[in-house]
Length: 483
Image (cartoon, rainbow, N blue to C red; front, side):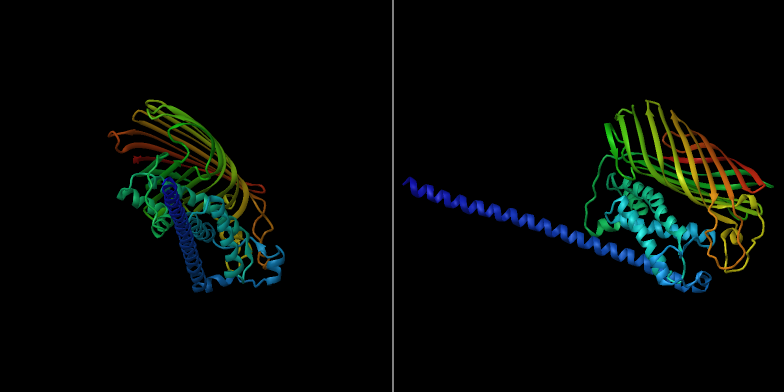
């Protein structure tokens, strides 16, 4: 009697085991199918978004063909594809080169980042899109070397900090405010999350410092003094700076900041500033505790961007400096009533800069086709460097924020389009020093701060025996919301 029972038990176990195995296989297969479906949806969404960006950009290009014809030089495909003879710096206006291509780059990078690609892959997508644009849509033109550099650098320099701010809000509780701000700062990530039906995931939020300000400044510029209204924002996230003790490498984009302000006078916009940075890689050591005590140290390499605009009477001074690569340092100390942070960085730069030595001189080459941006628009392309330092101190209800940025560029000569027009000036150099300080007091606990501000700008431009220098000061009062 024992044998039939054992046989029956063996049969039951065999069928049960088979059922469990089949169920495991079925579950695994379902998960694989779901992953395949998710990858397929993501690839389709990425293609549609990127195709829309290129389609709209190409549509704008051909709708404004009359404005583009000045650059149509019809280089041969053989020259473009087999040599660098058709690769030149272009002569477009400053706004086209500094804003138009930067905007396209930021959107392209954000699409790639929002669809799950990492920082390096998104940068490569940016470069690929830029190269495709130069060789296909603008096939009648020389390949613009400055556009390739600007597009490749400005994507991670501007879009990565925005992505990190969006990630900060995505790591918080699922509230209407967090959902809205996450969508504003990283819209393509939000679209991808909804298309893939990914749930909201709350996690420990990193160190951050968000500031919004509004006030007025008295500006003392060469030959003028005026009162401007000013608004600004300063958003910074250190995604690796959390509670606990840890030493190790940091994720790409882990140290990111984007800041800017606008100034308005009686005649409209009188000044603007955009400053950003983000890290490619780094190492951090930290011991930060929940009771507010701790310290952290970060060293890495990264990129960034600086744009400065000032109206100086009859002259407009502009600098767009694209920080190619450089070392970055961040030291942070926390005590019960003291929070102190020191940051510094050093970059190699490619830039577009107003030739200060030439001042408000009329253009040498006022009619297209233009031979040189200096001759036509009074700016030039340069190589150089940026040194940056910043000290942030919060003590009880007081705060101090002091920052200085030094830029130096030397002109890249003999890179024109060789169209037979008058050549622009050569051997130019320009230096800019931008310093700012804000001292504030928290009027209402956890409320707005009243801050006094001071900005100083030093400019120097040289051309042969010409050595022109000028300065600018701004004194202001503002209300600041800090989170």
